[in-house]
View: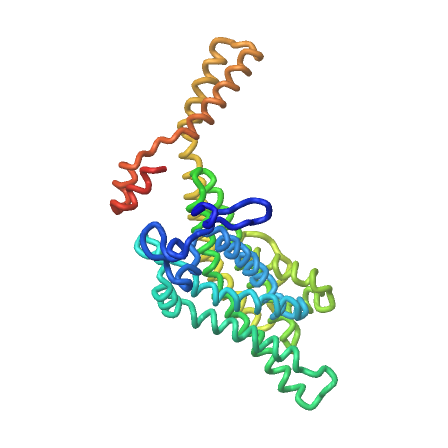
Length: 364
């Protein structure tokens, strides 16, 4: 009778009903309050999906905002509303997401909220406020009115400049990049990911410079590089491609038929050359280091492959037999790469792992 009383019908089956005491307790004691249970783990699947979605929004912002500031792309009301909605929700979610502190996950809602308020809350609030003001001005402006047209144009230009504050959200790229690097196990893949990140960074820098270069050209009241290059009446894609090409040539020893004409264009070109000198030197140094690391990872395999190849040549091994040996060699090389070679003791020599975390690592 007691078993029947503790059961309730669900569909056609009988399902055990949790008692009031079990609903208030957990394995470690009393059940956590509702507010505390709503805090998400930083590695939760929902959180990771949200972070990746935010990274995609950031990529779009980094591409779209400079184009809109240079008037190469028209304003998109739907996109402004989408970004405003997403980043507003993101601020709320940051109050309910745990964080890593000293190798441990802090899930206390009070400490999590306090840490966010002291770090990036006001920066995020500022960028969202700019988006909100932009959307409000876009909705309230009347295209047919001419009384306040000058004031509206000045306000629109100011808001376009303030939208550059969205670039502060690029810190999310570092968060996503760190998470992706920590998730990759193969060292070769990590090196390739770093190279891709370096190339992407160079492209983004050149994208910003190209939009600034085009903006200076159309703002000139006298002859500009657009007039000299015959691009003043060109389509926006053609003009942007020319500006992007000019920007790339400042970073590399390449040829280009565009040159600064006015004083402001020449000063900007000098500044770009100085930035390119530092940026591209750093890029080459990191690229060389990454490629050297990639070669060193495969040095032992290349040495073994050279021994096998020398053996095949010295003893004139037939082609069909050599193919069988090579297939076996590559199969065993793949097995050696997958074989775990690092123990917990070696990790503890590199990282000061707490005893509690060591116990967790031993279970894997």
